[in-house]
Image (cartoon, rainbow, N blue to C red; front, side, top):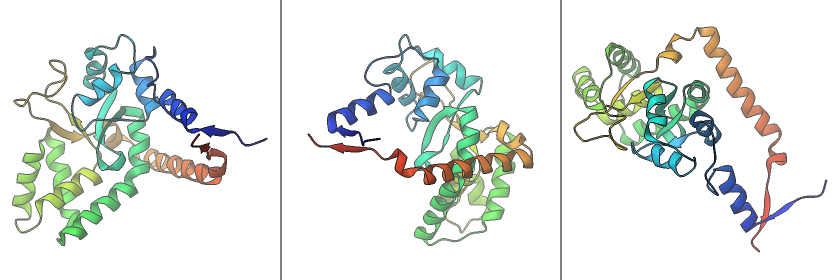
Length: 228
């Protein structure tokens, strides 16, 4: 089969169509989020605006309700930043991305030149966060008391990247962004922690199989384009 060479404009249109940015589409919110893989969610309002620009008749409660029911979660994922994804995709992606997140945490600790007892930090954090939703200010205070001489920023970052956490907005329905008076909290995601060791290993194997498939078919996925 002859190569199909895309012009720059064609590639641009194809990319926008894939991202549902050429025109608003009719799609269930979970399906749209899964198609996008994840929505950037560093700002509380960003996923709402992102979906509103892509979906017809989208309303605030269409997403807020899914967050409250834990069908959609906000968590540290790609680039070690907050993204919104479905709970099912979170289980798949979080395990697959763990080596990257671990590497990011290790790089931060090395760059700051501050070593600490990582096992002790993670054990204490799991227990502390498992008791009830916690703010990062509360986590920082706990870690400072645990290891007074250690870099609290590095410890906090290690907790965020090494323990599967989802963020719970204190104010979901009332505004398109979290009010300053409402504090965001974090808690261990329940579905992941309830998985058996066998289930977790199966998810890891699924992620590794996906990586092998992409590597084996890399040339088939290559897209060529011209600047004209």
